[in-house]
Image 1: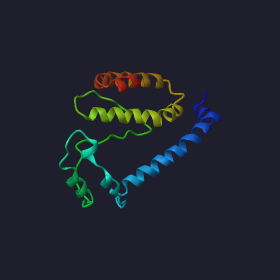
Image 2 (image 1 turned 30 degrees about the vertical axis):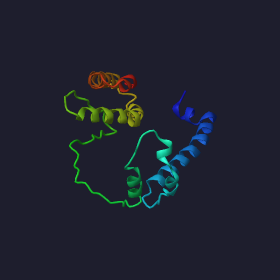
Image 3 (image 1 turned 90 degrees about the vertical axis):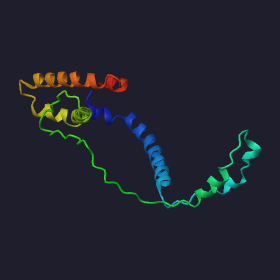
Image 4 (image 1 turned 180 degrees about the vertical axis):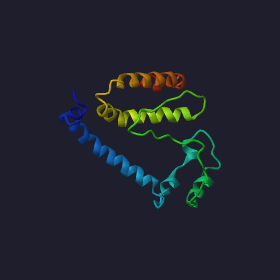
Length: 162
């Protein structure tokens, strides 16, 4: 069955109609919790009686709780420069995966997986009369497997997805 037909089925509309409001609710709560202008009300903590309710003494709790209200938000900057660059493969060319020992290998594998998800179908459609397409794909899968099976050895989820 065609992917487009599957994604337009009635059952996907039912799922979407339930997931979208849940997503919107979660996103609203997340944005509210990340909003630095929100003033939290800790007054309800004043009525807590930890000495009566806990078996352990927490002598610094009052001092800690009183300091929360005095905290201020500060903007921080960073001069971070990434040591690795995420590769981008052209949608018109089949990616090339080469084995090496650098941490770049994970990025190349992820970029190849993304390329496959986003461009493989159109790449095949553009070359459906090319007699070498199957061999090119076989070579890509073989090189991907050779590199990914080594890199994902200790990552069972990735190994399973692979």
